[in-house]
Length: 110
Image (cartoon, rainbow, N blue to C red; front, top):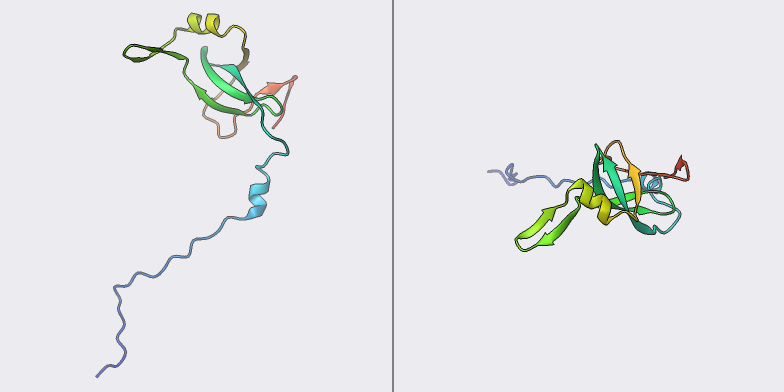
């Protein structure tokens, strides 16, 4: 008779590897972000976004739209430029970059 029975159906526990704190320190900034609204121009289309006034980091970009009775309606480009003519405008090459930044004072910071 066998005294020790092994169960081969058990799934071994997976030990999740932790990320290094050293690699995370590169992504942290040395200031508190202060965001202001701006217009991003990508492929000749304007998008409403927020940018950090200190480093130029972009966050929360979205289509320009207004609320109507059936939901939301996208604004035409000329309506956007007229509505947001007081906002600063930045041209960007790619909206889908992980760390999207804009040029401030003639140089790229961030």
